[in-house]
Length: 248
Image 1 (cartoon, one colour):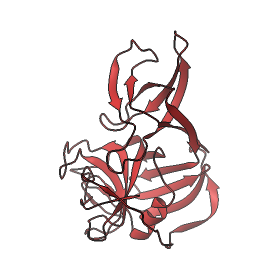
Image 2 (cartoon, rainbow, N blue to C red):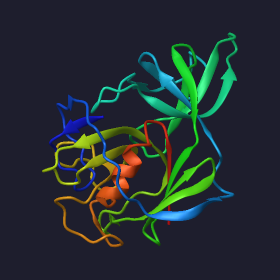
Image 3 (cartoon, rainbow, N blue to C red):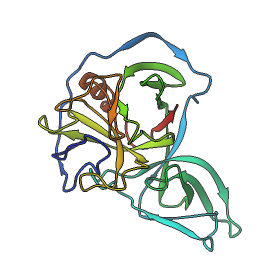
């Protein structure tokens, strides 16, 4: 976990020059939904891949295919390894193994193929879903509802984007920061703001400390705000690569 002094009131870049430090998390209350309830539309697990070096993503599983972008092996805010959701695998014509992954940043929801070598495979049983119409975040584990939380979403002029995304990294914020105590930076970017507070218009789930606006309203610049108890509960469990689905 890392700490930044940049406010996250809206889709900022979560700041620059983040200092890494150890942070003990205290147990907090969370909204409980009773016995876990299986959700038919949410898979029980998601395959992930961690990058062990920088990779070049391509349009096809072929070294001659067009390059989409370079993907850093480390996340920019906390320097943790980049973890990406896996969409599939393939063997190229030269016998090389390739992995189809979701990619961070613009355009929202884009994906590409990276060589499987210099990666490490894993999986997660966690999944986050936001339903904009109800302004509720649901956290699933093993395909079952684990928690539900009321949320603040983007206002009409700066809406929270819809689509399939993932968590890039978890950031611990200073108590005086807007959006404290934690932020989960996502692969989503604002479709209205190309830049915010010096960052790339990145969408985050974060707390409500030092920010006005009641839970259940639509007043943010696109970010998803949760109560301090809710975001702390999530920050203790949610890491890089975990899927985030945002629907109307």
